[in-house]
Length: 241
Image 1 (cartoon, rainbow, N blue to C red):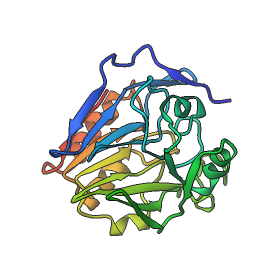
Image 2 (cartoon, rainbow, N blue to C red; image 1 turned 90 degrees about the horizontal axis):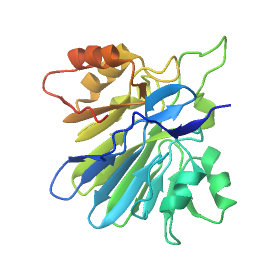
Image 3 (cartoon, one colour; image 1 turned 120 degrees about the horizontal axis):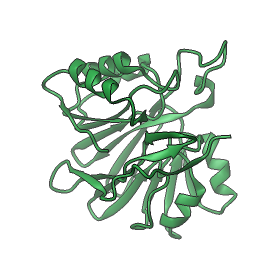
Image 4 (cartoon, rainbow, N blue to C red; image 1 turned 60 degrees about the vertical axis):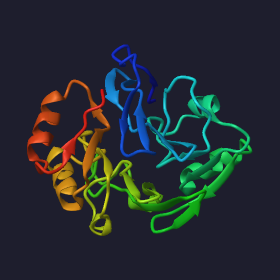
């Protein structure tokens, strides 16, 4: 059983990146998954008076969400306990099929997506993109098989495009992703996501202006150094810890 909770190594001060005059991305730092101190895939995005979250897990009581984007149902990405802290009656959830049924049982407003689907609301354009493993975690078993329909998101806030990759390996569907201001990319993860070389190759392929590594154990600082060395010098590396 996977246990997720706040880590004593969590930075007590939320960290933010101001992307442009209107868009700000905030992270709350480390969580603990079983015994590992882990930088998660959880972010808040504030734009044009709206508050959105991607995969909110173990964040403190905060601003209520207008939109919550979920990539898949694993407990380091999907937490009903955390959602209850930030949901309001008007909150809209955007998520794949593996998550939508769990939310609908709670009576939440849900927009179900699958890879390739684009929807828009309140000035935000959302494209769900594929996220899956090509390698096995054990024998023939993949942690995130393509058949599950898990997603990442390309979110277009006006003229600023953000890419959150979810949990994925380097896959052909990434070829069409371009003009990204900030990419949030999983690095490492013991066959759960891209390894360091794959992640760097993906970043150099889509060429975002900035990249935020996510989904890594804090103890693997050498992996982050290696990732930084492999990423193109024209791409800003942002470490939020």
